Length: 248
Length: 256
Image (tube, rainbow over all chains, first blue to last red; front, side, top):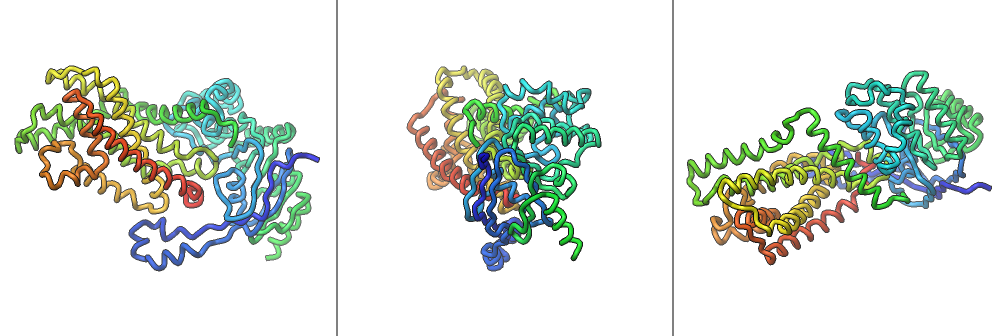
């Protein structure tokens, strides 16, 4: 029996509707009554979700847009707090960021690697010891001392992924990112994820690419209407999910 | 997350501050002079308006002005940019669990470094008026620096977090800074303020700090009792602001 590294026990997460507030103080005061009413109205995304993920498992989440997949990753990463329910997460969590989140366009590739590596939890010493290997992996050695505002979006993605690839995470969170870069780099990053998997890294994946889920995951969870509709073999879950969406 | 040592936090803050400094100076070799341009221009304008035209009874008025304007510039720059700093790092805050209060901290420290870099200019100006740096500066500068840092960081935390919920706070902050500037003894001396309004000026937390800097730079004195007064004021504000930030920080990822 392997260790459980992620446990969700009846996790509920709702969002208040902030639209009246984020409209600004002026709006808030003008529509004061409406705003207060709106604050109390909460939009429940996760309605009591329970599951367990063991160490080294690769779990894919499927479901419609807005069903709470990214919210779930946010809760695992610790940036969101659930309304109720218990969560247990053990190990160093590394989220795969969107294209170049936390990068600064005016800094060079090399400076961005250091910045990003530290933001993601490495010490400066660790980053510096790995920087050559990160640059090598990214395959953009020629441009590494240029500011990244001149990079193409694919090059930024390569750089971002290369930093993550050297993080040595224990739990890796992937949110729709496998489709960046050209085919060669996609293959490279796919292989890197496989390598992580072989090393025993726990992977939680959110994707609309059902093919990727089938190929990579040991297990798939289908979320619908804030609940778990199905949990099991990826082939079966994906098949059911596809059939249900076709029906409509 | 675990395994986060003091060393890591030190790396984090230094890399964030260095990033800001690099970005600011990257595109111009004259970067340092650009950051002096604004307060020096203001000094020139006030000198002309208040000394040449209005003839205020303050001696060495140009020196008087820059000793107030340089610390003010630090405060005003940090506060002015604080509404947008969290929004600017939205993608990071939404995905990575890291100490978010480091973002405003880096911002305030960045402006603090600029302020420290202007101290040589203050010394040169002082020498022009035959004011020789006093040994009291050795502890006076760090102490005044600490008080202003606490106050600025506290307000930056408060404004940056509230602005996520009320996105038009940014505009109010600009107005607020404008009012505050005239309510701070930057271009006038506190002794010129009529007795009955003086308390009002001291309600403004930055007033005491500016007066402290000026005592230090012009008169070479450090009034310990007065220092304790505004340090405690800053400390109270900081504690309040920090707690608001902490309370709200769990909601950041929801509203960004």
